[in-house]
Length: 199
Image 1: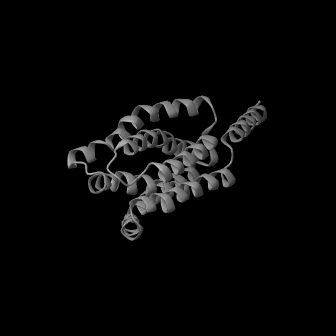
Image 2: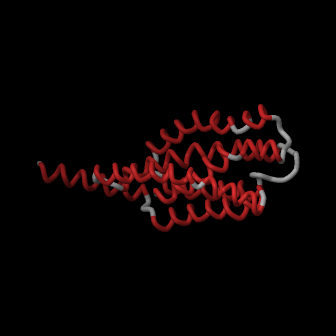
């Protein structure tokens, strides 16, 4: 989950929070004000929807399936909508809205599934600590994002670097991460066994 979160931070924080306003100015011809305001819709969407994502994950153990789904959706919008050439801003608006939805669920469920997978408090603390480390490490890799854009262009970088990275994240979660619904059931059985042992 920490490695996958590294991919998320690189894709989202570095390429969207860091470089998307520059793209909107250079390619879409937006003013400095408009290019900084459009990505703000990501935050406007993620603030309330992130709370909803947390409430949903509390009621239903769907974190793994949701993470795989939202990473695939993110890959698709990077391939078709993000960093598209031309001055038409429709694709940029659509991208920011859909990306805002994905950005509400992916970080929430990544951090939410970690304590489920690590029952030992020390291991859980170390996993979250490692996740924080990868968050910083991914941001340091911003230079590679800039080099990629300079070498192949905005749209090709989105299609051939960022979209595949999101698919790698989806596949990694699907294969490696335990299903949180099964984990919740196992935890309940363990708690019942502990109560029976105490009784």
